[in-house]
Length: 443
Ligand code: UGA
Image (cartoon, rainbow, N blue to C red; front, side):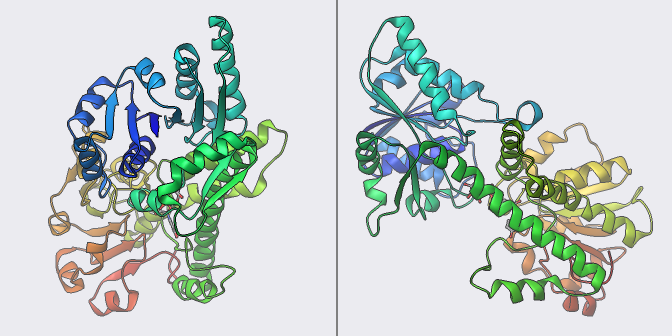
């Protein structure tokens, strides 16, 4: 099949790369000419395991191309995926500027049938909006050209995106058209072999399913963080509680890890947008507002614990921060709990020695003006002459660290573990004062 993907960001690149790898001919369109040039020569600016080699292999095989020319993009594929960004706009509403622009371009340039597929996370009703924009553009051109719009939300996780695309748990398509169903089956056939993972449903249900999935996962995390905060005050270990409840298959072990709050480009934005949609529809989503509030509070927990342990603000102290990305295996800092901590530490007059295996450069750029923040080359370098260590992201390399070395390096022998990476008993044995999330009587 010939497929056009509008938007060469995270979702667009993974979709384009994987569909080309499946044997389709794919043209990716992006308004950013510099990005298109870099991608055309096989350079991927995003850190995602396997993505650059996937792009390179498919460029070399001639199945994948990039362009900044929207008209060329519209003319290329029978299928046109919209995978542009939908950032948080006013009042948390998803900003639809880029989606609208792609729909306009399709309406202005199409000359034959198109199946337009909404891949971006978009509010319920977007398929109707895209349909209206294309219809209006066609009317202005006085053309009668057939087209369909369907919803095909993306469920990939950063750090595991290619596997998630190629071995998806489900492929949801919102449509009521047989023609669309046949085309989407053909598009995904290479990744739908062993069992039928395709689910066809109403277009609004598909749009809402994406938000509901992320809101459910965010709810699990906020719920567990709430239990962790209760556990601390009742002197129970939340890690034992987690194992206890996860063993019930109705609850499950996934996404019940307490921590210093969820971040990333999806959960915070999507919960906000869903709340906004519900509010606009005249419904007050009490639970989902609480999910946001708990997460907001949870991001303060690291600094609160540090203050408590030190008996006051860390003015003029050296604080080592391990992990900056919002989760391991990415260099993405968006809405990362580490940023909240860094802001608080800087405001308090602390010196920060931060280390992250991937996100150091991005963090240095973000805090270019902050002379009190040093990005270090290794976890060990970040400990040099530091008073205390705060862990924000559970990169695997932190788990194998020698706790005796930590105790030697840290002036105050203090560890605030925002991801429960260490065993409190082993920390105590090494002479460290340890504060995890939901693990001890201390708050
Ligand atoms: C999330 C969803 O997991 C994907 O299914 C979805 O497709 C994607 O958003 C999206 O909408 O595009 P992602 O943002 O890559 O994926 O990250 P997750 O792995 O879900 O982690 C989100 C945050 O939750 C991280 O900050 C992580 O540290 C936190 N988390 C996760 C916890 O605090 N506890 C947990 O048990 C699990």
